[in-house]
Length: 79
Image (cartoon, rainbow, N blue to C red; front, side):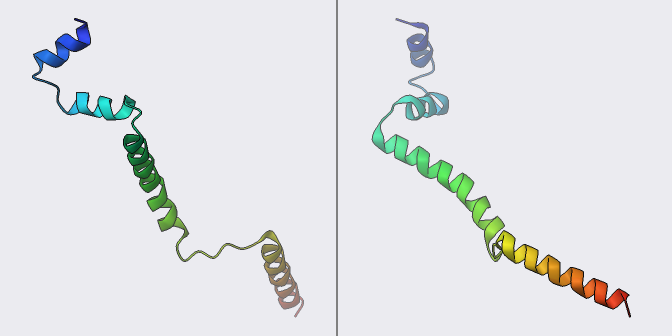
């Protein structure tokens, strides 16, 4: 009997930690898929919240807007 077995049997068959370790290290397909889903949700929700409503612009769009603002600024300062 190893120390892990002694600890499990002494705690009455395991608790949350032993169950979590079983799911983490079992390699069972459904546990792997559940872990991927949890990680996807953890990273997907903040990504969605940051990107909603924000229209991504290309670098060319940015340059055109900067040129337009620069030309407006220069034309207003010459008056």
